[in-house]
Length: 173
Image (tube, rainbow, N blue to C red):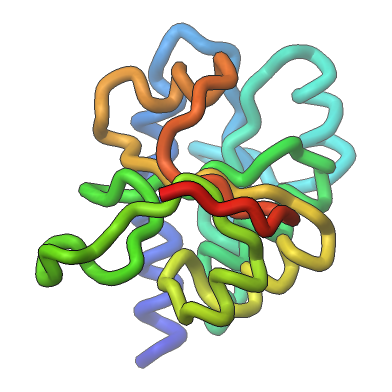
């Protein structure tokens, strides 16, 4: 059951990536699962070549393994292609909080956290495997709300939005 559900979720994510791809931006979608009609297989060297040509590469459907989360897949692919940052898009969460702001009115948002602080405070940024992979490779993470208009553009332009998780112990609230 778990394996079937994981594959269904992965294929659903491919559909989501197709919506992102349908813009006027040169984009290539790569997947670990075979869905040749809508995406090409993930091959690291091909992804790097697309990036060299100025294309956006969307890695969809996780790693193709049923017991690996999409968080881990994102961290793995980002490290493999030597990406600058992992953009952890969330729905209705504009960053990392000390507690769930929907149920705790005293929850405070963090602007910057170190990987160790995320682990020590048991904050729910991503699964532990993904976080450890990011930490071991000094791969920064920006947690932000994708559905705030202009948020992705602001990140690309270097503006501080959401929460940055990185190798620093500097924390602002």
